[in-house]
Length: 151
Image: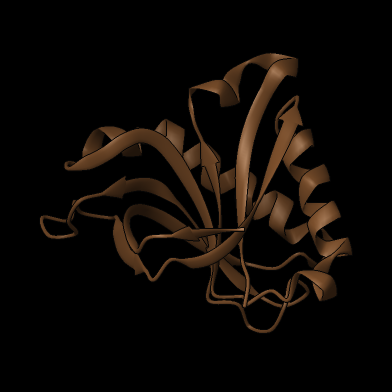
């Protein structure tokens, strides 16, 4: 377990759910838009080049609706580019999981492991997030860190 400091993100988002393959479809479109529109090039004040995928605004638990936001951590949220949104997250206690292998299959498999441990993890359902660093695009040797908010 580790404590995450509060952080700010600028990016794009979609409201979705894990039912009937909806999230897979919606998130595919969101990631496509993120790269096609070169969202990263529109954002100033980035803390790093790490890409964040944040899951927040949960209706209930992982079976309900939620918002996914893809973007970059920034030092401030003023001067917001047109068409993008800014959010501030409180941080707090998180468990860290690392998806290893070919993306996006490794991330999906890791989330399935997280959902299977839902009760034991004592999740807060405030803001969970994935961090895509330089090593997230290394073919079968890729890694993505997933942070789960817990009580």
